[in-house]
Image 1 (cartoon, rainbow, N blue to C red):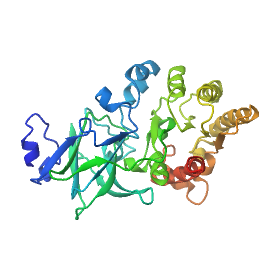
Image 2: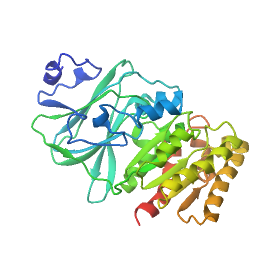
Image 3: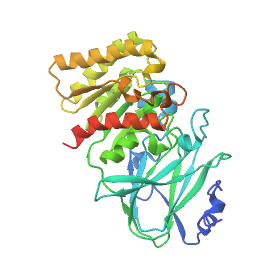
Image 4: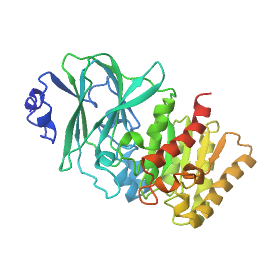
Amino acid sequence: MSNEVQQHPDRLMLPGDDQIQDADLRYHDVLENTAFDLYGLYNPREEGGFKRMPDEIAKAVSSGVAYLYTNTAGGRIRFCTDSAYVAIRLTLPRITRFSHMTLIGTSGADLYEDHPETDRSYHIGTFRPSASMTEGYASIFRFGTRKRRYLTINLPLYNDVSRVEIGLQEDAFVEGGMKYRNTLPVIFYGSSITQGACASRPGLCYQNMIARRLNMDYINLGFSGCCIAEDTIVDYMADLPMSAFVSDYDHNTPNAEHLRNTHCKMYQKIREKNPDIPYIMISMCDFIHHWNQAILRRDVIFDTYRFAREQGDKNVYYIDGESFFKGEWEDCCTMEGTHPNDLGFHFMAEKIGNTLGKLILK
């Protein structure tokens, strides 16, 4: 056990703590240490916790959203340090275990090195949870050398996190990380696919891929099985400061008729409050496995796009979900016929990122 853990008898002993023996280790609570930049979360320091939207909004939308809004999908920590290693301690109030996702994807974290000279980020390590954990875990990545580095940690996609501690060498400095290109985030609204199912680790959901490619900030408002465009959440999103809105809204509606009754209505509400931002509409990505329903739903989404264009909206964009996986590898892009695997998310990130890149980088 490290000296730092011994100095905090009130702290849980988590799996992995006994593997971190560095005598010069010092843990920093990211909510208390403002040198760590927090992204993709709703006022974490003011609220004293990790969540994606206000309590009162989430609870008013649906019981499903009220359960999922504290999952840290899209949550990122950015900082700069000269420590020779980075450790992480995540305290988890409950452990999400799925048959179709890795434990690293639901509950793990991964580490990227950011390069300000190129505005790009590259994966260098993964913080692996213990398969037997019950309350969280500790993990460490060692660089092998000591120098100034800009870093990003992506938080779990399908798990609540009650405490995040970053461990660095005691004499290492820590300060703010690389800044994102866009001052206001891109908002993504959608289903379990938007939330990140079934990326093998957090950095491989499509929004994190795009964020690295474009050095783009964003907020993930994907809610597994609970994306049906209720007035409460649409009104909330319409009032958010944003640089663009991505409507990945399709899967969770019970049928095409419900989609028709809500899809254009959502566009109109968000466009009314945000007349100048790019608005991107996406249809179902797993087209070949649900082609009958996918065609009906795609027609609804394209009708919204056509309506917007007829109203004179020149900053609205449509991406056909059938195009994401089509080609040689189309039968290899999902985990079980619905949720993209890493290959599927790569293709989504490529197409959506191409559209966003033209809008954000211009």
